[in-house]
Image (tube, rainbow, N blue to C red; front, side, top):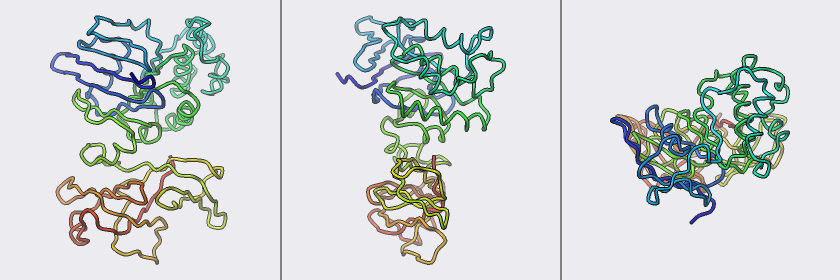
Length: 359
């Protein structure tokens, strides 16, 4: 038995839809539950929450069993120490933010409280909102309050069902830093449903990839993004995440340099402390390939690379998986380019990255 792991095994029939999954994921960090609409993401979370009783079914959260149908054991929802954040913030309209938060806090026995009230308010930045009622909050503010209320129940698992889906672009931008703080500062495991690749790349450590009720991929985000046998590596926004260290700022040219296993990345000047670890995305559509290193080029990020795998995506289009000093990279090119370069696994060439985006 792994005491730091979430393990679920469910089979549930709903009309002509069948959920049949068996997953293991680390008992800390953020695990994205990713898939298209109707794939079974919310049904999976409802099974985990005990809102649906799957038979057969099994669920163990960091060493504690919540369901085991082989023993006819099922912990009802109200006895499961979890927090649940929905697409729409379900706040009590007649209560102030302060009273909404106190409701979540007071329903937890004193001895079971692991999350401090004041620290949660600071973490989610809701102190200026305490005297307001929900109708006077923006969409992003309501979601921050809903997350704070869920945390104040001191959950052992936090479930988030597309918490940004109902927000406009500005509200999403505003709430991202708070979600990242949750990621960095809390030890509570989070299962985060989304169909937005940007949210996966920015927040997740691990991923459960769901398609038509089946688990087709399960593992570390960095690994699954580059598995050419999975649809996630062929999406229009396909790419890789690289975790790199801030090593230098170039004030003359307004640039920032990042170090990673494959060398050094150059991006526009960012206000980041030296030594900070950051996450950047390199999109497959922004990578071109050449057999020789073109020294006289406007592209600053050029790396020697080895072709690992190739796969035809659409007629006339290839996805190339590359190794650059131990880091992985994807490049989307035309089939004609692949023929002209005589690409094949094992060949060494140069990958030219046109854009590096800081997440």
